[in-house]
Amino acid sequence: MDWDKAQDWEKDWWSNCVNTLFEEEKQIIYAQKMGLDMVGNEKTPYVFDLHGQSVLDIGGGATSLLLKCINFTGTVVDPLSLPDWVSDRYREVKIDFWNVKAETLNNSFEVSPQVLHKLHRFDESWIYNCLSHCENPKEIIRNARKYSKLIRIFEWIDMPISEGHIHTLRENELNEWLNGEGKVEKMNTRSMRGTAYYSIVPTGL
Image (cartoon, rainbow, N blue to C red):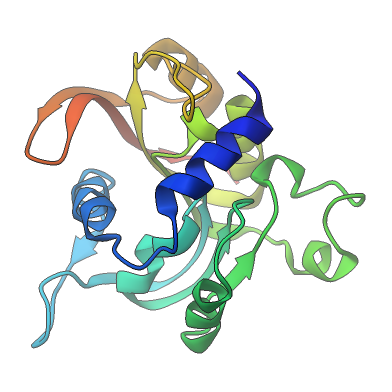
């Protein structure tokens, strides 16, 4: 499948990014499976305390889980063309948004010198429900291992290829790429049906 065409499909799916509740409902489950600490407050139960960690959210798109977090520094990397107000919202809460492919984080031809200068060893990289959309999922995990001490991941596996999902992810491949092991679970809820793979993997940095 063609990555550019898949991006067009994804852009149409997100539309103007105004009503994203359905996706955000799923993200709450992803976050819990990824071991995030949900503390809540007087306004909402959906607040996650990151305890001062720096986070690289790969593929967070319009509604990164970081928007529901406290006590962190964060960067979202996503190549999708999104409305300007999405970037403004990230800027308002001091989350960096890099509109680039995660495969090219260390490629000086596609990432500005200013961004390259900011790359460092993040405490964590998050990858959730994005790898089947990407051009090279193995390379993305390689970069996550290169730039972070810990990877938190939630992905759907064994799904057939479709217009917007150009890779079928497999448990054994993810284990190999992560140099670790994940849990596999059949999910069947109002918003999610499929086979999930999730893990928390130290990178050894």
